[in-house]
Length: 147
Length: 147
DNA sequence: CGCCATTATGTGTATATACACATTTATTGC
DNA sequence: GCAATAAATGTGTATATACACATAATGGCG
Image 1 (cartoon, chains in turn green, yellow, blue, orange):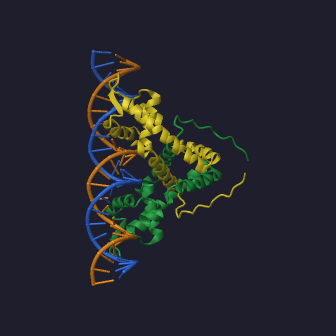
Image 2: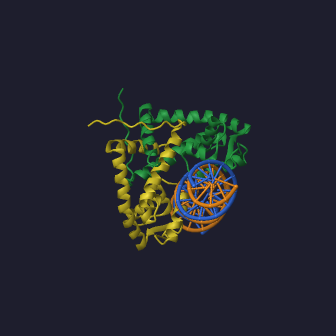
Image 3: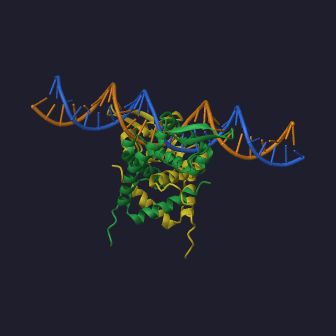
């Protein structure tokens, strides 16, 4: 099955980094729009999802898993804690905090999950399975740019 | 010439959006690190570069060209204006502003340009020409997700 | 000319991101 | 056990992002 690749307009900037950033903004806006009814952003849902899988986690541990800066994660948790979706308690090791989903948080994940699936599916349709797989492969390699 | 593709660790999240965001962060950190001696971020250099090509521009016009939100651009200009790299003057149409590089700004672009070239080249070496071309093609398609 | 839609911009608010620095607590080596 | 080190977290500061709302100026039309 062959198809003709649509040609997209060349951007004046040949900067790979800016190309990444523009695309990242676009995809984020796309996902966030679909997730809107849940009241969650994609980044927030991702955080909650990680907590769901981990059951409980420390900040640094979660940051490592999510490959995000520890202090960024710290601040990203704030609105979720304020909304009562996560609980931040002292850990056994007094240096650590134990982060976990609340019941409200679990419900929010369920609600967001379905919407996320729609966005994911839409994107797959838009990009095509093959290109999407290639994309994710390339993204994984780029991600390895930082330790 | 064949080579063995290195396998990168699977991330627990299969979310295309988060994959984009993580990769975007990584690439941004990589470029910003190289650009550090110039005192500019990659986003800032890109803004200055666009101004260099345009000679002068309005905010909305520049935002459209850079495919960034108008209000985001507005705020991104602040530190550059404070540093005296760009000048924001009233346009002929009294609704508009005329944005242009100052002499200092032009010098900053020159300084940043060489570093940017290094980052660009390093990434090309890292990704390989073919994969990098494919990546940029896929990114352009993703960018078209938003109008 | 005056009304109105359009266009350009500014601002309040909120999230996302990360570096540098400080603090607290655990761990390790002697 | 104590001192030095390492680990986990918090915070100040700054940039990046974008939505909602407000203001101001232009342009078209009757």
